[in-house]
Length: 227
Image (cartoon, rainbow, N blue to C red; front, side, top):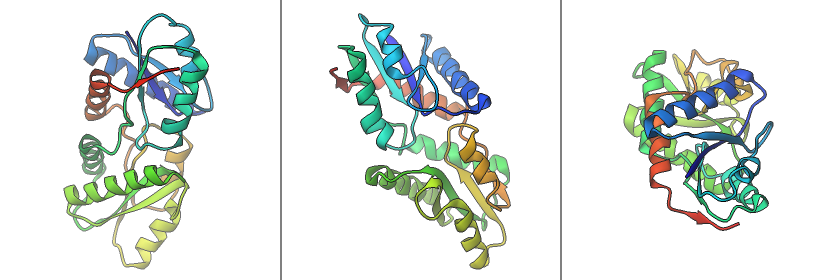
């Protein structure tokens, strides 16, 4: 069986390398090879990878934190274009309690303290289902930290992260902490760091909890998609 981790893609070499590192760690957890594909910016695409293994079952795990356009439209389109007859697609990674634990770990590592104003910062989406997923994650993070958690975006959606930080300042926040809800370094993480917050956490990256979640998605994948 072929296992393929499908990510968005970035022009930053460090971001591409990180996706490769995640795949290697998941491969070690599964004791099986894990390939990578990208739906945007660079290749290989899922269709490219699937065409190289036409006769073997394949499992795709979307490395996306909500079930937006890339998960619901792009990936099925790539499967259809590949002509591969036996593909299983796992659900998006979020929302999931494991991701909330990863974000809370990143907050603690970065120096978050009770009483700080917390903003969960995602890339952004115009997809209603994905937006619901992000609000679910923000609510769950609030329950874990005991703090009110606002939701903001690096690109698509309102409020944008800089506006959210400014609004927290106007409300009298002593310190504003941005919790990055991104997988890797790239343009969007740069925008979070330029938002004016006192602390910005690192992306989820190679956190062991994320690796375990992706490995579990490969093990439990049960959604067949016929080309």
